[in-house]
Length: 464
Image (tube, rainbow, N blue to C red):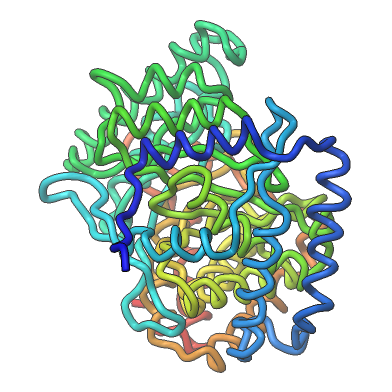
């Protein structure tokens, strides 16, 4: 028997590109309707996937395992669409399983005394996930970039950081694929290095390249003198299950420069995947596809509500927890979930949403919690480091819960904010919840924080 030797990242990327150049030709609309939407419907029937809607946290291991099998069968049949070639990148189920077997189980993020260790987690594991603090690409005013990001990096309970996105560069609108994008990417890098120095955490890992919509800024700032091999290099899969050469250019550059490839895929609820069960299968398949096509080390997502753009609604959380459990029970992929609440700084709603989503993801096996992307990342400057402090505390406390107790808690938290989401309580901008001279939360914002901590602790989440 010939011993299996995993392909290196360069050879794997070349293999992906070759499949994208020679795979079956298909119209994009046909891929959407037949391969994705039709494929999801087929495996839902085949595997008899029906969630128990009386629970938010999945309690059925057999259902999670069927979601896993359905996702792998679906992905093998569907493939990933390469927009630039109009062809489908396909892997057999056997190839998918072998690649997953070779996937990394752990990684060091950052350097020196600021380094942290991420590794895959099991369902119900008592070791908490890492806490990545930051607005996750939300728009920020130039003058506020450094104080905003310092509000996250200075928090002891934040392990790694994810920047906001500059809205302008010296007052100019940043145009994609222009020199302005290159310069803005470097300004993001310079600002983050200043933030880490001021926080006394120069080796802390950064989820980099948030400004770069195209490959231009990414390729520039992740090069000599820019972001480091110990940082996480981010890029996204196009919904649903699509890639283009711009994204693969980023992968190629990150591989050759050295870096932790940390991509994401955000399925849209009510879209091609349909509702709860379909999104659970699609999310599982897309996180696996991140490894197949992007050589992901870590695998991220924030399933998206079509109107509110959050992931803290009931059915999205049910789908998310089910998918995470399918992955945690059947693979060793490191999974990262972004908390995208409708609520913003200065509101109790934001903290309730964070507590619900972070608890769900923690007990379901996520290895890292991101954000929060407060106010869904749609309102400029509406985010602060205090909610990341809260997220970290929730993750550490939730790791002590079993799924049944977590489900009770999440249901109670949902009752506190579910009827408010359509009202979009986006809260206040950063200068109204933090003192800019000290970069500390205002007394009013701290009072709300302390009130919710006491409240949630009384409901059985042991926050300290």
